[in-house]
Image (tube, rainbow, N blue to C red):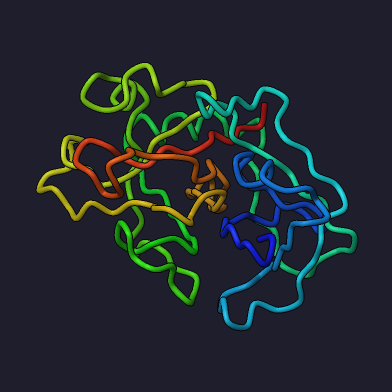
Length: 219
């Protein structure tokens, strides 16, 4: 978050000195202009700002297609915030299965709770989670078609048309949630499966337009 012109994004601590976030968040400022607040919950009292000393943007990041929307920020000193688990190679098959059957995923962030609303003062999450949307469905015509790129993206959200009946509320991430975590439970561990990346331009929680996340795998 680079003050004074603040652009709010989320991120996840993945080790004592590394935060993972979206490339479209990390590329907008030099590392010296970025402020991170590991473990923050209250925007009014986020704790001590930490300026990263290294920024690494995925070499295949494409700001036109939003493919490979991944970046790492290195902290100059270790944080005590517990890290989220990254997928191990042995998790990839289980993650693929979870996506294909629409298992529950969980999201959190600082974004709008409704399209156009002000950013909340406290970290938010979607109660009860939201389902993965199978890759083939998210890449189909009624959803995102060719804009969905299987290698680097995954979809999740309660949008009518995802096969959930009766249709639940259109739970979704929204503007300001970018870079935040999409996690799911694999072998009794909560594993990072994606980062909030993009969605439909008409707003959040739109029918047949679930959230799109940068896919995180062990590869």
